[in-house]
Image 1 (cartoon, rainbow, N blue to C red):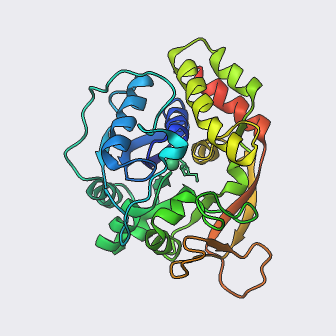
Image 2 (cartoon, rainbow, N blue to C red):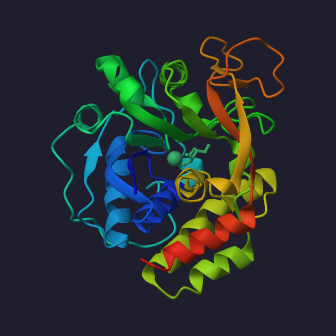
Amino acid sequence: PRKIIIDTDPGQDDAVAILLALASPEEISVLGITTVAGNVPLDLTTRNARIVCELAGKTETRIFAGCDRPLKRPLVTAEHVHGKTGLDGPTLPDPTMPVEDTHAVDFIIDTLRDEPAGTVTLCPLGPLTNIATAMHRAPEIADRIQEIVLMGGAYFEVGNITPTAEFNIYVDPEAAEAVFTSGVPITVMPLDVTHKALVTTPRNDAFRALGTPVGLAVAQMTDFFERFDKEKYGSDGAPLHDPCVTAYLIRPELFTGRYINVEIETRSALTLGMTVADWWGVTDRAPNATFMGALDAEGFFALLTERLARL
Ligand code: BDR
Ligand code: CA
């Protein structure tokens, strides 16, 4: 299995991404889950990560709390999407599993130093603060990362938190810039892909029909998560942004995209956090990321439902 660190700000869609990874031990070995401030403040994202691991029955998973604010800016959160707790929808028990004493950034650095070079993949599902901080503190780790597969950015879909920016990149654009200029192989799941992973009513019914605590909780999470995009964008079901990352590790053939140049806007007040993606190759800027654009949505939901049934 592929060794990964999931860096996350749960979030209902983060939760489903984590569940999919934990349900797929043949393909994915989760070395640890690192939390970051994003959708809600750090204490809540850390709490939610514990709730999700307990829901999955994987209390041996190691969870590390990370940075509580972006590198240079005040934290922007998204309770309007995820609810006050960040995981509104299901009623789940208070978590009892521990959080590790080690800071998430130290765990990321130590793991990349200890594991053989090129064997650990980072999976950021929130603002890139922890990853950028680790690279800044220990620049030599960049060469040792197998790949970064992240959810963030947009091209044709433009933005969701501002007219031109996707939330994860917008919250910490300086961190995103550090990651996109690091030279590490990067695969990006932008809104262009994640807005094709929509939980329509039949798909949500399939989660519920699993008849398990996990199936029910996921159905209730997506019920809650859906209402924002439905009201705002008229979308047909909740977009499962972050599970695209973990699904890609299991079934990369579900996704297609292009290896292109992507730059992060960090200066303009108007377009802060925009991912300026050269999809058409109209500049001579060197490609630095594989930007996905298309998804086999039926295949994606078949995989997700089948894997959630295993928990
Ligand atoms: C991203 O922002 C968060 O609200 C979601 O969890 C996802 O990671 C989508 O823009
Ligand atoms: Ca997220």
